[in-house]
Amino acid sequence: MDFVLKIAALILILLGGVFLRRKGFFEEGDYRVISRIVVNMTLPAAVVHAFSDFEKSGEMLFVVLAGIVFSSLSGMISLLFKKRKDKGVRAFFALGASGYSIGSFAMPLIQTFYESSSAIVCMFDIGNAVVVTGGAYALTSAVLQTGTEGRETPGSILKKLCSSVPFDTYVLMFLLVCLNVRVSDVVLKLTAPVAAANKFLAMLMIGMMIKPVSFRSGLKEVIWLVIYRALLGILFAVVIFFAAPFSLEIRKILTVLVFAPISIFAPVYTEKAGGDGGLAGVASSVSVFTGLVFMLVVMFLETLLAGQ
Image 1 (cartoon, one colour):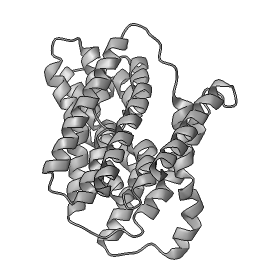
Image 2 (image 1 turned 90 degrees about the vertical axis):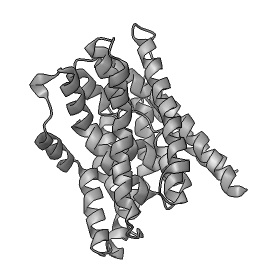
Image 3 (image 1 turned 180 degrees about the vertical axis):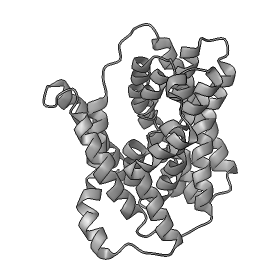
Image 4 (image 1 turned 180 degrees about the horizontal axis):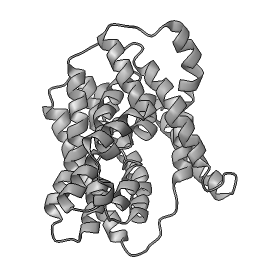
């Protein structure tokens, strides 16, 4: 019953964002204000608290590597199997398939059900961030020979990563853990109210961002992309849960993460690579619902298995 109530609470917040925006309580672009608060305040505070009781482990470096591999593999595979499509469609698939929305979606969701999961999610997102903030675009534009005017370089990708407050917080906290430096109780108490607001604001923001899907030309590509991500998510989840050399706790969390929605960066980079940015935005909205369903189902199954 507790599991169901936690799910209901998150869905109600998300639906509240959808309802309030549609009724005019929020303006069309108000989600950007909340997005800035989440990205620059509540998410970094949540990351600080995630690492507050984190124990240093060699496994965590491999979790970062897993973040890079699983975030990039889907896009790389799509480039191999979509050779007959035009470059715009291939860019749409490659960038829509690459990476996950972790900090603003998966983290607050998983934290609700796995209290000790935050540091693991953060480490996976370090690897994921390398892909979604430019890595996937650099690879896609190089393979398709598109977007030459704004092509990413290792230096530009590194610059974007370093200008991301959540990423900087991930790296700083990980370095402190490696150096056996603990965050003081004063800092934790001062940031506790901000960190506590992350789940609510993140889910509300996602609800405000969701727009009705229009049945226009290209919807078939959206459906195929969502199905493709779901099928690879199932494949990745099976491989991780039964074959990955991690502890059971880490395997359970990574199994959920590979069903997270499309990254918020995907529409921007899709347009830069010559694809349909608007259609990528539609795909991102649809993936919020499908990702939520798959993630909740996986966590429910894991809860049932743990109870046996």
